[in-house]
Image (cartoon, rainbow over the protein chains, first blue to last red):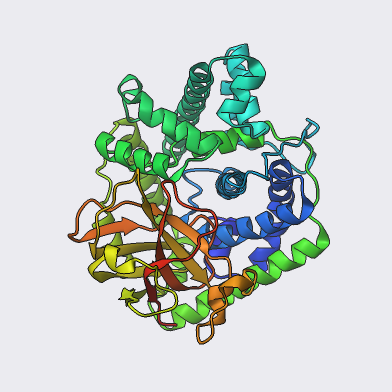
Length: 187
Length: 286
């Protein structure tokens, strides 16, 4: 019997899974929102949007394609990026970034995909790592990264494009290997 | 990766921008065109990589405030209850998932075979043709909670744009929308083709789940209170022909219960807060 993930149970209409999902990923979503928005009320609104989006898209989660934490982070980042873009169309609301202390909490156990992503990241060049960290972890726009590093905008975009493609390739390779091993064991 | 990267730098630049800083409406349309040209449908191809990396680089986690937890939980339970009510009236979506988890050994082996087949297909770089908006619209029509309504032009309404007739050449068509999927399509014909450097059309979604009255200047005697809310931006679009076009709706925020869709004329790039000179609209049945 397969054990059902919390998102699959949400998609199946299990109301108890809602609280379990908040327990499991509330800290991740809240911390991501705080990183995007310094204003607490704005971050709270953003978190509510993210979770509404999660309930709606839970049926799309496929454990064979991505881990649950990656799926949650994907949905959250999509909503937060869109919200931030919308806010920054107002001239009075400039982009905010909040420095978050590095260091993984005990609760956030690193799953396979994050570990593979980190391995791919660590093999990138220093400039590429720096630019990707600024784009993903600090949420800076490509133009802001170019301004603060002094790199041409085209170079920043190339670093981000190539870095993400490399991470994606590593994820695909590792996932294919894992699938092959599962099939071998079962046959 | 199922594409020759060197041939698709522009596509991957757009995918990387989407995954990191987001896209303007124009860039989003460019991305859809590039994906169509490349024959792939994975618009979130690099989103997963950036999400996995974000989790990997994640800093110290902060607990969600208890008050916020309660709000999120209540909204989640309300949403599930609403879905169950919707399913009582239509085909069960949840039942598919329940069937999946009750599989026996045979089902497990079937799953493995399917997983192997998927892995093989991915590794074999099989190109997939993205579904057209017309096909996606047709598929959405079979979803349990989908609602559909025709466009209404507004010749004498207080909502109508001063020069609405300039754009209205016998507007017809409809909107199909699913709240559960946050997905919908506009079918429009008879709308004046626009020059995107002069003006663009923009869709606005009035959502019964959002607060009303936050823009009181839009209160008009005899019109619903809903129109005083800040609507959700449904995306900017252009029309190249007076003939029929099917346009995917790109809601910039999650929509709880869409009630009215309105199209306005806005400066190139669209507006954050519209003056609400509506050209035409549709009201979805409840």
